[in-house]
Length: 422
Image (cartoon, rainbow, N blue to C red):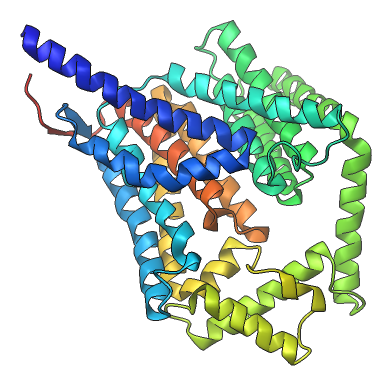
């Protein structure tokens, strides 16, 4: 028994290092994109080795389903890029990140993570977001360029973490201190989104608060109290946005101006105008091979062709992706890619919705619904699930939530147990 305990303790320590690596990577996604992307390059190769640890492994059905569906996305990339002969090129490099799912899974199956791990992760992440905002605000920075390096990813990741924190803070069974910390994390995350000036994130923020407030009022026993709390939430949101009001107004006005200029035939060489142009390229690319797409090289070739025919805005020349998960996947991987991506989304939406009916895991499930719907909205105007940062965040947070739900849910399916020596 002593030998067995020592064995488990030593290998358990090694597995703990894997969890630390995952946590550090998650934190850096909020702080600085460069070290985060470096970690996301090597973790898909390193973390799967943790599966070999001779420790008791508890594997739940939902985790296996997530692995299969995320693997299908990788396989769709393998097929589409393989047909084009691009697997061993720089173009395919970012697609290896989908294998991170098996790496994170390989660590979590040895770990009985608790809600405190999730709470600590989101609160610390939000603190790093707030650091970036304050640093740039007092040093004439802008949008996360100076600190994070990728404003759109910074804003959307910050917002998602903030909204997860807001959902978790609604759990009245938690202590007052924990709920206050989570509320502060929510404020920090929303502030990061506003500071980044990411309009796709703002759209989701408005949609989220509309649904959040409506559901709180509908399900509340005390309607008057619920309305007061909803009003307080809106006032808080306005107070968070107040220091950035000029930037928000300018960003929104530019958006309206871009759309008006584009559809009036005036100017397509604007932020939103170019997005519409890229989407046209992806549609034409999709027509060439609707089943498996024509990979990144197909997008670039089609773009160059349309430029040579004067059928595309001149400023599109220097861009290399479609600025939309929907259109980018449609053009580069065709229907095969679309079915694999949205198949994963639909599985998660169904899993989290069903789980939300159970009181003991309701707030984890609602957090998961927030992540998935957020990504679906972000992906309409940005290639968010086609880049390492976006994919890495999605994989880590969803596997953590699935693990917590599976461990906590009363009456859930019994796990598959491997290497059980107890």
